[in-house]
Image (cartoon, rainbow, N blue to C red; front, side, top):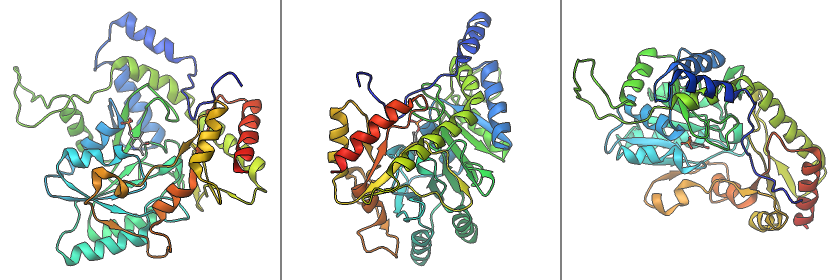
Length: 377
Ligand SMILES: *Cc1c(COP(=O)(O)O)cnc(C)c1O
């Protein structure tokens, strides 16, 4: 194969360019403009949620959610450990203290049991957290009923990091709409992309209004520049919102394509004794952003390296944050039912992501499978 097979490259629908042309023709080349308003409305209506504030990244959206919850220096925020660092960096921006929660084997996401252990223990220490950040990795839903019940029992708001899970569902509800706030990312490799961008969503319109204010330098409504809050420059560009409008039109199609890629891998790898594909938990629908799997008896890194020799991009799973030097002093609550160090570390030690581009041909897919099976030995 001469052409490199990428993990999850952008896949333009073709209509995005019309929105960009319109922005040029009307000279809305700014972080305000009609595409932003329209993209926010179309996105809210797709998710069946009250309101959306578009941002220039998913990380910015998480940071705004923490601001809205008034997370401050010394506050504890419970976070899933098995995730990308962008989930937790905004906690550090606020000088708050992350406390990490393990994953569970049937969803790979936050273990409700470990969450409960953390809440019981922190309550005893009189250090209850100010927020819980749950992540829906690779498009798969966390066990939201169990997590929301604990959060409600302890009266703690939940932020859903649905950066990888746009289009996924839990019991018929779109992920990102179940907690108090949901965040999404439109980075280059996500299921739809604006090259860079993000969204903060909520059913509380007042707080979304406040997020727009904070994300645009916190300008007070006065005839001169007047400020009482710290503001940020977190707005999306009108040009990129145009790209997002075009991409949103093909989102459902992209979900079907991602699921079809997963099913093809499943068919090819079904009988392989050393391979387990990421499960899909009952009553959920995964957008299958990336097809991921666990392997037995082989180092995942050796597979990634062998695929690289054939110009195929595969990657390891997220290295748990509680094992990163950046968080070396952060507490961690392990899933009580595992014999491993933690479920998060077990997943990292055994797992990898396969190329899952929605424009991948059958021929490319078969090539990847052939090389993968070879690498498995
Ligand atoms: C991509 C991603 C983010 C960050 O989004 P950006 O738009 O890149 O800032 C956050 N969390 C997870 C789980 C992600 O995969």
